[in-house]
Length: 282
Image: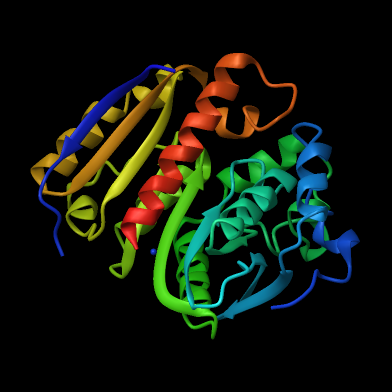
């Protein structure tokens, strides 16, 4: 598949044993946006150790899904930030696929405590309620949750202390934003999310940022030139790739067995690109 490249590279200144016992809890974080049984089956059939942890900071406690790789050495970690649809089965499958490649993957449910009765993503009634809750999250709370997640995963005995962050859709925007406040990230990955518009925030970015976009996503793609300009002015490294024929959310859509050919091709190419960049970033 032909991949159209928007590349801007400037000087960089300066990311057990056994399955969890209660799959009912592990896989209750389904997406209300669409049927993701295929993703749920992938996670349930994984041989890797998965667990739910509670990350506490201040008055908050963030429920997070962690998957460990089957490796003999300490591993780098990837923080996976979910879409506007919350912590779904697909996001959990992404974490598991990353663990299969040798990374500790942790996916915090940013909606922890935000659902009725103090619940999380799985406790909302429908996708519209999830979207509304995600878009209403205070920016400072999101950043504090991600900071606590990074501190937690960096300190795990099985971790080597290196961290990457990756986010999708809404999470992609948060990934870029988090890169402007967390100086010890090795790399940030932004999947069809927008970049900061504050030059001072961009100046604080201390790691390379890679963006992945679908050709048929004019709303998000219209923001790329400004992001390029700001990153170039601050002498930061930003590389953006646009995948032919793909729409917004193509990494999730392309993972679905019933995906259209363009999203499927973009999904496959993007995963390869992402894994290559991860390998070279640690």
